[in-house]
Length: 471
Image (cartoon, rainbow, N blue to C red; front, top):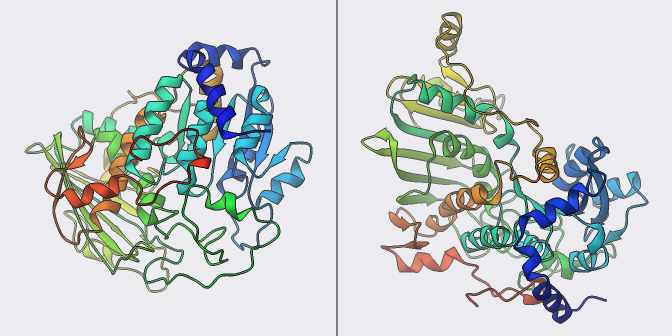
């Protein structure tokens, strides 16, 4: 049986092996050129991973399932509880404790998928990395900035192959826009506007719900994991946790990790030098229902070396955008999803419209795009495309089998997640301009903001492979 003491002793003994990337690569290639994968969080997004793997049995063996709640009464077309995959694959071993699964099936597991609520991404991924496993982790990579940097460090030291689950990064969108910019079509970048109708789950103004009886099918202690105790309620388990600060990262964690990927990748944005936010009321329990964030990036592709980024969530939209007719920005009362999730990139020459996943990108307005296509004014492809567009799960699997890092590995995902999570810090300081030094991982003009870089609660360390350095 697993004990934390024995685990730490074991990982210390394998430390030299973990530092050699080739060791894991050789291990994979000996397994009949298949990757043995265990999935933690089998329902919801985890089911998407399972389905992707099931369609590629020549490349993937699913060897373990871990989920704290097999059944669920959630009624969404896209959501399937763990029970759905359990019934499809009854022969695969099941666990509720990821630590036990990684201990019992250690020699059978090459790689681990983490598809749990945000607060457990870092604990599970770090435990898997400590066991020498390749890791795929859903977005956002982590709940806090410090966790993102730590996962990047751990993965690099262990030499494992990693990927953050962001399907948009596998799409053509950011690549096309980067090619348009490099061909001189867009000119210098002035402003980038992004908005979303999320949250579509309860968020803002929520009160702690009354305690309910814990369902017999739920291992609630494992669901809480590193988070402090809170009485169980069906109001946030297993689904509506994203708007709560102890578990999720709100609309920014859910959707900014999609939207921001296009400009971040196309223009190599890096981290903003300043950031400010306003929102509806916020408290210690949940994220606000609506927010606006302004970021300024020092970037040579921008006018005067600056690019301004404008983010709105909760259904808020920009009031005006250069070269965009005002009617585009007005919500349609008969169709709330009409233009509800959009990105506009305003250059000195042209404006680009794309969606949250970098799809259907075009020079705006549409007629301008048609004219450019007819005149062959758009450049040819110069950037390598993904071999698995829209399917980050198999992009990661193929990368593991080849022994190489995919484009969305943790070296990319950690600083990208850090940028997205900065809005979750600034929303605590309504309208105040925060200056951020990414090299030092600190706010230089607001020391109070630095406490939000790390978790505001003390982790329950039995769920971690080692004690965090800042505790």
